[in-house]
Structure formats: C-alpha cells, structure tokens
Image (cartoon, rainbow, N blue to C red; front, side):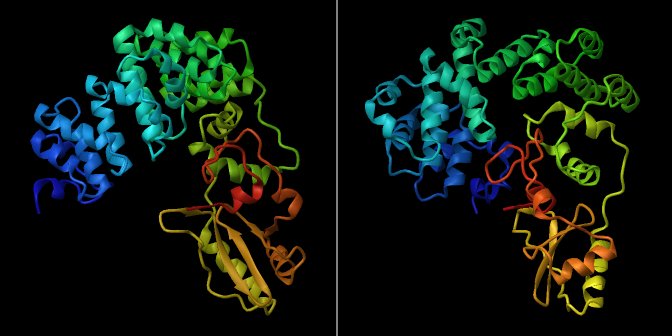
Length: 399
C-alpha cells in the first residue's frame, strides 16, 4: 500500500498532518485521479493548499470544470485554486448558477470571494454563520480572502449591521483585531450574543459590563462567559441569586421533567438557546444520573407481576446515533422507558402497562405533557436546531 493510501484509509482515520509531508506532485496526482475514492481526493486536495505544483494546475482546473467529476473533489480543488485567473471566466459564466452539485454553490461563492468579488460579502457572511461547520468554514474562507484584499473595515462597511450574520462577522473581526467585544453580549440575536460570550476573555471587564448591561439577557450572557473563564460556581450562583434566578417558564412543564431535560440537553445545546437555561444548569445542584439498569429491572418486575410477560429490553439506538430510551415489549403492546429518569410512554394511553408501572413509581407521560414544547432550549434534531417537545426530549432518537 502506498504512502497516501496508508495515510487515508478512510475519512475519519485520515492522518492529515502526515499528508502535509507528502510530495505535492504525488498529492496532486491523487487529487486528479477519478479512480480514487472521493474522500482521498478531497484530503489530498486540502493538503495541497499553498503548494500546488504549477505543472499540475491545468489538469486540476479541468477537474473543477468537469461536472462529471465527484463534487467533493471539485469543491476541495476549488477551495485551493479558486483565486486563479484562469478560472475567472468560468466562475462568472451564467452556467455556474445551475452548477448545484453537492458543495459546489458554496465553493463557487467562496472562490469568488477569493478572486476579490466584494458583491459576495453578504452571501458569504450568511454562509459563515451557517450552523453546519463544513459550510461555515467555506464562508469564512471567502470572507477572509476579502478581508486580506480590502481590509476588515471595508468589508464591515459593505455588510452593515442589519442582519445577525453581519453583526457576527463584525464580532469576529473585532476580536481578531484584539478589540473588546463584550458589548455584543447585548445583541438581540442569541447566536451573536453566544459568539461574543465564547470569545470574551477578560474577567474584570465582564464584571464591569455586568453592572451596566442593558438587558437581563446581556447580564446572563456575561455571567455564563465569566463562569466559562474561571469555573467559579460560588460567584455564578451569587450573581444568579442577585438576579432573582430568572428562568424560561414553560406552561405545563413540572420541575422533575424540567430538571431531567435540562441536565441532558443544556450542556450541548445549540448556540441560540436562551441564556436562562444555560445559567440555570450551571447553578443547579448536582444530581446522581438515573440508573438505566435499575429502571429497566424495576419496570420489567412491575410488568411481570401484572402478567404482561415483558421481553428483553431492546434499544432503538441506530449505529452512530443516540437514543434516551429502551423498549419493553409485552403482552398487548410495548412501552418506552426513558434513560433520563422514571418516565415511560406508550401509544396505549390507558393500557394495562400503565396500571402496572405507575404503582411501581414510574411516571406515565401522557399526551398533554408529551406535546409540551420546551421553549428557549434549542437542540439538534434531524437537521433542525430549535425547541423540541417533551416526548422528543425524554425519548430522544437521532440517527
């Protein structure tokens, strides 16, 4: 097996640092080879950034132009060669609007930025603020190219500040220049405020800002940022108490379900989650996680005592995915037992299983509670990144 093959057995196990040590001419050969798998071609193209052999440029440019080529290789090559003058006419040809192969519209847009087209700034800012990291980095690369050519202030002026994505770009540029971005904690868009909270790095400045912050949300973001920097739980709790422990109130959501959902989802929540949820979780008392095996054993015992003959617990967790429940099949149906606590649910609203499980200490999640949306808490779920219903949180499934 050749060096490149050994370094790139698949996408997840690739040695990208090792590829940087491979001769560029060899890498270019792999990147242009249609017989190679797309991930190897992409990885080799990425490793060529800034060191493409001139003798290989014509064939690599032809790969970019050829719509029959795999789009992953085309877009990767465009990322390193999009600035070439030889591509300019192709980039601006009317046919590019119909070139919608996977990743190509974004790569073309970024390449136009690399070529100095300031009219792409708004679309690139949108792309740079995309929740998907693989799209975001393409947008950021295009914007960085514009900034390198025209300066950050010029592009900031081009964008203005009307849209959250424009303000996010301003925050990134201010931070890159070593400027204070604490005031962006008051941005009305939670995504922009979250970005600022992830970048601020001056504890004393945060404490000063807290005193003058114009909104409760801005104060909460400043406390979250302060805790991120110093991990001082006592300070965070004292400030939280001084604010009256504000939280997102959800009609119909009791404290037990609320705590289970908060513990599971707030630590990895989406950026636009309300900071009230974040600080509530930071300041909550520690709780022992639910014992999944104990819950299942107790549920099986209760169903067995009711002569419902429960089967072996099964998980619906897909390969590489995640669930927060197990299923117990029984005579007449099945129940899902949450891994987050003593919560069970079934399609049979008033089944014999319910009669068996509730006396054993389980909570039957009925339709009114199951359909309650936990507002303000944004969780990734099949491409969406917004609030979910209780049923989807206690009994989560994601492939």
